[in-house]
Each structure stands twice: as structure tokens, then as C-alpha cells.
Amino acid sequence: MKNKIKFGPAGNPLGFNGQTVEVCDYIRGIGLDAYEYQATYGVRIQKQSGLKLAENALDNDIRVSMHAPYYINLSAQKEDVLERSIERLVQSARAAEWIGAYRIVFHPGFYTKYTPSQALDRCKGAINELLEKLDSRGIKKFTFAPETTGKRSQLGSLDEIIDICQSFDHFNPTIDFAHVHARGRGCIKWADDYHRIMVKLEDGLDGLGGGKEVLHCHFTRIEYTDAGERKHHILTETEYGPPLEPLLEALAECGWDATIICETPFLEKDALVMKQNYQDILEKQHVNTE
Image (tube, rainbow, N blue to C red; front, side, top):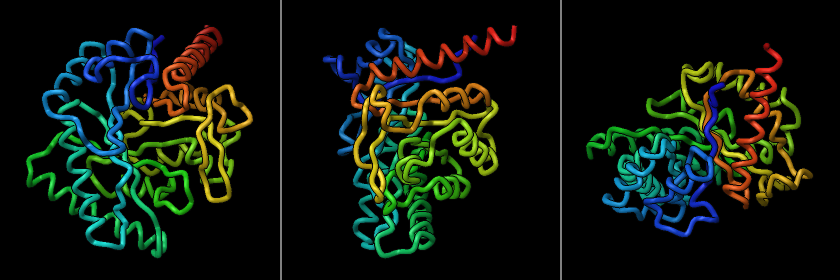
């Protein structure tokens, strides 16, 4: 049976004490197969280190993604904020080439005084400018992955993320299921809720599903308020959603290729739990088809 989902931590594993350029040795050693490099407080990695990290990932068959800085707002009202946001994504794309990241995850922005449709339009205008800058600087190998956001004040509903990815080449979604759950005030309870998300993705984005493309995902248990996400929790805190097993079952039933990045406080430990649960589901499917 082939594992069609890769699992890994958001950032360096808690048990890893070495240099980041060697982190994939550790990740492979504990049985995981994905890694999301965190540039959330700024793109600081240099080219030489980036190339070493890419080589380390290739040697260990680790799928690498990158999380761009938090300080990005492509729907900002102020032009200087918009320009700095675009420049941070340019820096992210350059670094992603070095480290071999197959996705560049980022949060699109905030509504502030705009209506959602106005904020989306402003974001798209900024993306056009971003793509022009990347082309002028000769940066070619990139796939941006705008992320579903967890606060209701943020641009980044599932429909908005699909719209952005429909509108531009080199864009594919990051589906943060905890964010969808928190933004929807606990909207994911059953496998059917996950299936609805996947059907919407398949209908909205050509090439996703059926093994044609990789779906990039984040997962954690999450605490939320009426405004949206509040705090991440570990997998054993089952009083918080969304549920894990129905997600894995839905992905397995649909035959999706996916990467699931663990964002619980127990990074690699919970990523290993996710992987084991998925393997158990595959085993049950195999037994049932015999």
C-alpha cells in the first residue's frame, strides 16, 4: 500500500538540536516525510544554507514547504504596507528556490475598512504586481499557497482562497482545517464536512484531487471564539476540534495526494500520531477490499 499523504512538522522538531540545514536527517530518522520551513518572522536564510537544506531534503526524500512572514497584508490600505508585503513575498520566493520548497504558504491579508470583495480585489492587484517583480528578477520556480485564515477579520475564507488560486498561475491553496473550523465557529464535525470542502476544491480548481496534484494542508486542534481562532491544542485534547480521523478517512477515500503539516504544540510527536492513524486507515481499507 502506498502512502499518498506525507506528514511533518511546522518548523524544526522539538527534539532537534542541530543546524537547520541538517534537520531532514532527523525528520527522516523519526519516520516523517515532510517539513515546513518557518520564515514567519522574516526571510533570514542565506543562499548557501538554503542550498544545503535542499540537498539534505533530497537525500532524505523529505517534501519541503515554506511559510512566508506573518507581516504580509496584500489588501492593506497603506501603499507602503502593500509594497513591503510584496517585497517579503519576493524574498520568500527567492529563498524557496534555494531550499527547494514546493509551496510558499502565506496569509493574504485583512479586510480592515474594505468589504470582503474590495479586499479581494486589492489583494489580486498586489499579486499582479508581485508576479511582475518576480519575472523582472528572474525568479521562475515558485508556487504560492495562500492559506485559509482563522480569524473572521482576515481575508482568507475557503471561497476567497479558491478564487485567488483560480485567478493566477503558480498558485495552489493551503487548507488549514483548524482555521476553517475556527472561522466557521466549529463547522467541521463529521467526514461529510471534510468531503464538502474537497468537493468545493475539486469543482473550483482544475488539477486538484484524484492524484493529479498535491493538496497542502495544516492541522491542529484549535480553540476559538466568535471572532475566530484563539489557541492551538495538542491532539489528545479532544474537546477541541476539528476531528482528525474523519479527515484522514476522507482523504484516503478520495485518493488524494496531500501533505499535512502538524501545527499542534507537540510538533513531531503529533505528526507521528497523524501518520500512524492514516496507516491504520489504509490497512483497514486494504483488509476490506480483500
